[in-house]
Length: 138
Image (cartoon, helix red, strand yellow):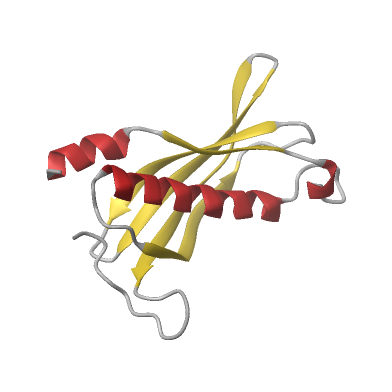
């Protein structure tokens, strides 16, 4: 795949995850605990990154989370919200990929932007034992 093909594919949003917010996920204020959303953001970003890697025809990679930046909580999330986690590629490095994760729900026929974050993953050699960074691209 050429770099222009990669750039075009990187701009396409990918619905990586959808989840129903449950009562067990609430904080003392009755809204969804931010840590629950961070966990889903991390999962969605990894799913989106792997989707892109497969789409570019690159070999499968073991990705580990190394950072979560620019997390912004815009609106509260409520019990019963069906939350969509959509990803786009923000940056590709030699051994890393940064995914932008947008978190939205629909309320009263309106799409509400709830949260967004950039999550960086690094390609590593092993799931266990010593981990070394390995090139992301073939």
